[in-house]
Amino acid sequence: MDTCLVTLAFSTHRPEVLPFAASQMQIHDVIILEEPPIPGFKAMLDGSLPIDEYLLQVDFEFPVFARQVCLLLRGLHQAGKVILQVDPYMEILGMVHDFFADGFSPDQIATDTPEKEVYDTEREWTGSLLTFYEQSVRAAFADVVAAVKAFARTDAARGRLRDRLRAEMLEEIMPAYQSIYVEAGYIHFKLFRELRGRIPDCCRLQPLYLMEPVVRRLQGRRQALGPGDLLTLLYTFYPDYQGGRATLLAARSLIYIKILAKEEITQDDDPYPHTRNEIESARLVAHLSFNDCWKLYEKIRWKTTTEARAMVRAYAEQMANDVSS
Image (cartoon, rainbow, N blue to C red):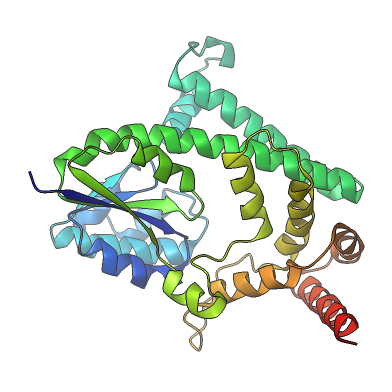
């Protein structure tokens, strides 16, 4: 049997990633998306359901990206590509929500089942996220940092389970095709390890960082990662880590998320606005100490993204001037 190729593509939900994703999708037989089966998806692909109607059924966080990716996938489907939606964690979570909607309670979920595992993980994740939101409104900086660390730890645990469940399903799919494109979130590195341990002998697994050509040129690295990403990855691979690096990354992440653009950026003069924004934001916080973050957080806590960014840039420039003088 010929060797099959499995390409694990680390991606973001930004329009600027789509040209890179499209070029790779076109050279694979099968495209596996990181999403659960969505009603109307097949009808959208074959054109019997208009894209805009399909998008109304789901609350997509990035609408510009969502519409463009639908156009891309419809074209690939018409070209004969097989397109699958595979994200069992989110699929099971949807089933749990339906279970509750039918009048059942959490204690009626059978133990030692994927449903129970997903429910418990999601409950802990949601609780830590709500705690962070509450702390960010009123708590002292050190307590907010502690809440960031607690959330990152549960986010990492959620990611590990999500990647394991996805790898188990992909293991069943891989032998049936010659070339497979697997979409993955840009820090789902655990999925690569999970797949590497499960991939059949007849298949070859390769990682692909879709934005690497751009990031490598701008930053000399394969990905643009913020301090929050680095913190989540730290807990992903070292779940019991207790060192000071986690505290510093958490402090920097509070500044980073205040200055990072939240909305989709579309501008004709720059094909990679989000990548540039992420790189610059990470650069602005890269040399901040815990005390620097503390001082800045008190100043920018209630500022807009634009105001906070200007203040952090001025602070970083002053730091650079003090070092050079």
